[in-house]
Image (cartoon, rainbow, N blue to C red; front, side):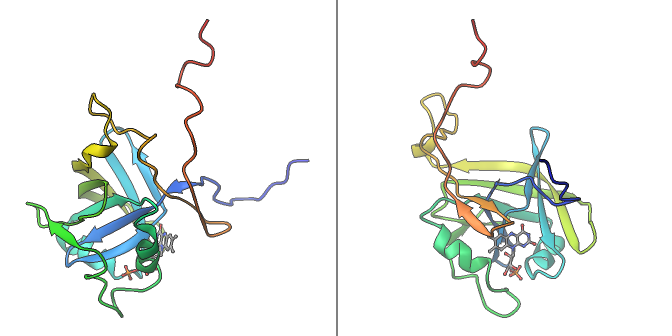
Length: 178
Ligand SMILES: Cc1cc2nc3c(=O)[nH]c(=O)nc-3n(C[C@H](O)[C@H](O)[C@H](O)COP(=O)(O)O)c2cc1C
């Protein structure tokens, strides 16, 4: 029997990301989305300290989180930069745009804020991807990101847990090939 949960958000799991804002400050987010082929969206509570840096500078970094990063990533999601200095949580470099990028991250996008499309209580930053920095170790010989090597941690809100990325089960559009 199907139960109507009314308007429960059910689009999980999502990739877990660490957002880096200028000064720097790091925040953990699971509410992210893909828009077309060159834009992404990050939804951040307007109460967060990070949003101030994003609004002021219009630039940020988005790091996909693997298991080696996620203990510290979890901390970035537990404490606010308004109370604790999170700038030393990760060794980082600064890009030509002045955006902090975590050295240990194997997959990072540096983005410019194109606009903010707020919903009650949230800034929904629509981001144009300027650069995607990938560790060569996660690339196939033809330069694509290899998700057999790269294993992002996933997030689900209802149980508030982290999940492991699974195995490749098939090539897309191959299942009905004759
Ligand atoms: C697993 C996890 C996922 C989170 N996802 C989001 C999110 O998508 N959007 C959001 O606004 N806050 C999210 N948070 C909460 C922020 O990361 C957290 O409140 C953080 O301390 C805010 O830091 P700031 O004040 O320095 O910006 C998440 C926290 C955790 C632990």
